[in-house]
Image 1 (cartoon, rainbow over the protein chains, first blue to last red):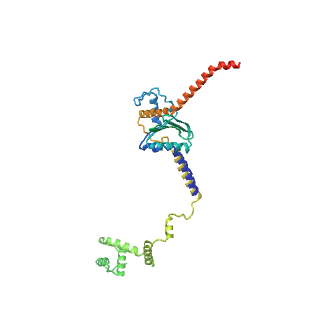
Image 2 (tube, rainbow over the protein chains, first blue to last red):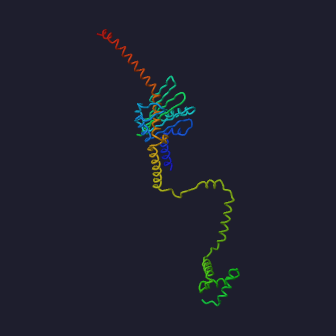
Image 3 (cartoon, chains in turn green, cyan):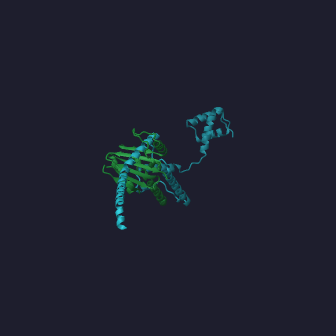
Length: 148
Length: 190
């Protein structure tokens, strides 16, 4: 019986490790946070019409915008936090760096207070590329996902 | 067997039986009558009753049944009223005891089932393609979000691009300067 329990605990640890990918899910219904999630089919359809220039966003001319960077991915999350939620979001990004084996590809700090961090985890499934951008008034995180 | 009593006498006896006034001998007479004689239609129900009673009277009751029932009732009273001792309470906590340990293959089957269930759960968890719920209802909304993400990424990469441009300019300046001094260097060398 002890052996069975030991095996069960080990298996559950594996499941818990997999659950690390869902670190951003809690922001879905959080107040003060803008949360956008686009899954495969919708991402593909959205990217198609965006690339074709059939969409006008905030009356800005989006024709000719280079969207090739999205071609390698098939899902996306955008989380924009404001106010006191910024620290929570930054805390989660730091967790990914320290505990979840994410590699920091680039980091920048500019004079206008625009900071950016690029994270990547090639061992994760789906492959995750995370861009965290911090300005004075908000913190935006873009998570691009690609199923292996 | 012949009975000297007529039907009217039998009816009178039955009436006395229902009133509880018959003797054992009279009741035995009634039972024999209903068991062996032709019974008029109006007494068929009485016949059924007497046959059932006669059947039950043939069952032998144990002599000590009264004592057993009394002891059982007394014990019931004790268990309801007497508080449980500490040991009894501890024992009461154990819900289920196996008299013999399960066989090896039972354990193996239980382990295998548990592992299969966990493995199946992990497989589904890993391969679920939609871990997050879609928030965009139309492709236009999705396209808008993609442009928004594009803006964030461009904003994030802007410092790197600026740095790259500055570095390129510096390299070009160095190359230009090198190009200007190259003839003098060549003269000195050759």
